[in-house]
Amino acid sequence: MWLEYAGHRARPKWHRGRRRASDTVFTGARIGEGMAAGASVEVDLVQHGSGGFAVLHDDTLDRETTGTGAVAHHTAADLHRLKLRDNAGNPTDHPLMLFDDLCAMVAGGMVHPDALLQLDLKEQGTIFTAADVTGFQHAVTPVAANMILTGGDPDAVALLSSHVEGLRTGYDPCEDPDLSGVRASGDYAEFVRAACAAAPDAKFIYLDIRFVLAADAAGFDVIAAFHQTGRPVDAWTMRDARPERRDVLRRLLELGADQITTDDPDGLLALAATL
Image (cartoon, rainbow, N blue to C red; front, top):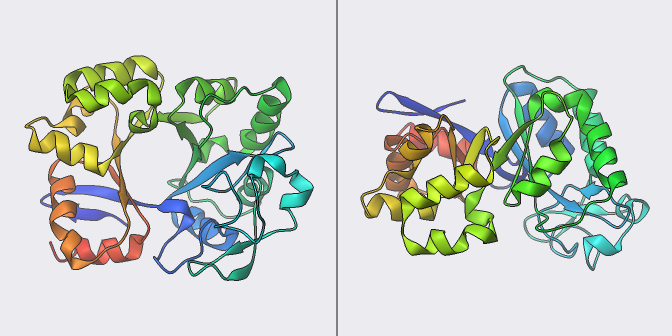
């Protein structure tokens, strides 16, 4: 499952656990399928009221689940009673997973050696307790070899991943408010330097496609610049695979993106075949 063009290939990443645009986000069935197939899959983590994490993108429950209100105001027991909503907002039979549930599912399922599950931490500036950190580390340790913890808060990522053997980390400088000034300045070389200094242990860099293309239009290859530091790059997010996305996909592959985040991996693979 590779996107290929002109001798270069990149992995399509299953954004929010989706293989197709019609999929409900964050279902155990799709995530398990991706892990068994050796895919690159992404889920988001939001802290809940019991100190652990829910597998959700939003910090409120209303859009993605049958619940209401802030995720942080609900306990693990509350969240276990909820179901996910589909793309039209209709309730499904898919349960909302907590991080512990996700790790247990991966540990008990078929996992291809090449499978990689990105845990994208949505918390910014959160103060984690010792119990929060211990709970995260206890859940992730058995499956750490096939996971990478990422986010726009490198300090939070470093804290949670500390002392977990085999757990890789990544960094999204486009989501780090501390880099917003240099990002907006157009000094792309300084942005790369600042990003590497902020997260020196990051094994993967995640960049907004709009930022990549803006740098390219200004004559700066930001993907190549990160490659020179030894870090592969994920470009996010291609929401769909309509024919008019062909030029963007071609350019990202020409620039050497190592991975492209998409809500429609199957559709993007089909689009790449037409380049």
